[in-house]
Length: 366
Image 1 (cartoon, rainbow, N blue to C red):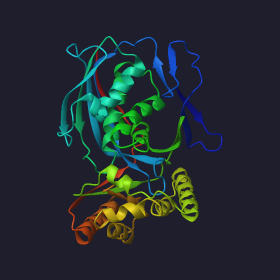
Image 2 (cartoon, rainbow, N blue to C red):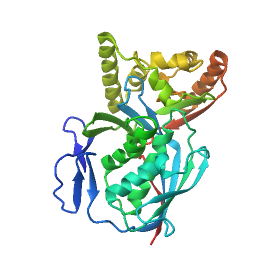
Image 3 (cartoon, rainbow, N blue to C red):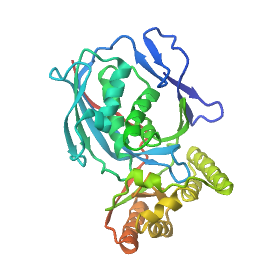
Image 4 (tube, rainbow, N blue to C red):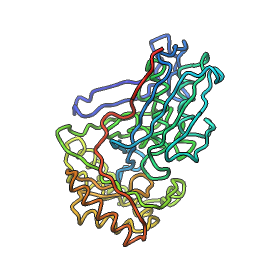
């Protein structure tokens, strides 16, 4: 069940939780093991076909490993979902995958979009109709931009919209988490902002508690994303993480994460950038595995970026600035550094913060 609470301390803080308490609405049954709800009465589809979009995401944001992330506007994945009489009732079939994901498995049990779609169908207790799904990948695989999460988020939202939007954000994030856990680990710092938009903090995984951090609308924020031609598998990058850390590094990273949250809420890009660049636990282990990353970060800062770090598990580098034109200059310097320091070709783009998250793009009524 989704609960939206406005913080009494800051109007920019929204808490979304998945409740363990029995639902007072008798049409819902709470699944205590998954902390999600399941419809007792199957809802009828309100559309014959829907198309949804979910944005790219930047996870970790430096010191926020596995608990901080944000959505990036303008790039992401699309899912088209339709009621299909040729698909067995209660099941989903993946009919087509295009774009950057042509090599992905079409078996819905082994595909991010398929897993998330099935999870939402279970929550909705769908038994009378079958669905076919088409995935259009706008994000490169293994880029550190939340590619798997975007597919899962778009699919979860599409199923929910097709049946009249009965589920809230936390349930959709749980569906996305089920997908993420099978491909890249049980972490919501990609899928939560992909679904909810903006900046999201995961306060707890058991039970799931999500805090939406609203960056001030009057402030400008641009992400400079530089993606090198290099593969950095999430599994490999996670294996590089330290098993133990010192107390001094723990205290440092906690203070930087706290500063980052405060900077987001206040729209203070100077502090945000400093905190983003100050991870002493994860980035020092991962940066050496991405050729040229240390030089790229240095180049971004020298070009005037407020901060720079690895996006998610990498290899994409992300810098922040308050000016689009300056962002393009920073990106060019980062591209040059990847080539000079790491002998890697790369591409760059400058994008704004996505404040909306996964959403319905089009629909065909019944």
